[in-house]
Length: 99
View (cartoon, rainbow, N blue to C red):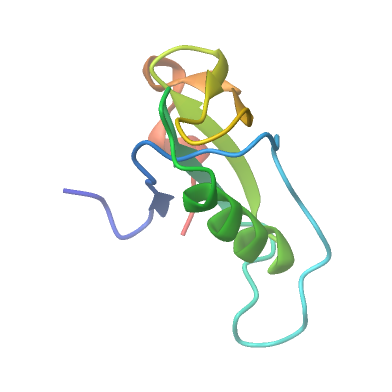
């Protein structure tokens, strides 16, 4: 069970060759400014499954960290795109993520 104080966007087998993204959040009720979110991925991801969540989160000001089984590059199954896993799951502390 995930605590209400933690937001984890878990996209299993997802990724895109993008590292942590941040941007100025719009001043509206959809703002995620200052929120810290993890996106999980692995080898064999489908490229669009993380592109859309990363763009959505970044456009609303969230700080994202791509996590996976181990740190390093993972490859999409449907093309040559790669994603950078910034942190292994074992190194992620729930306290580092916010809701």
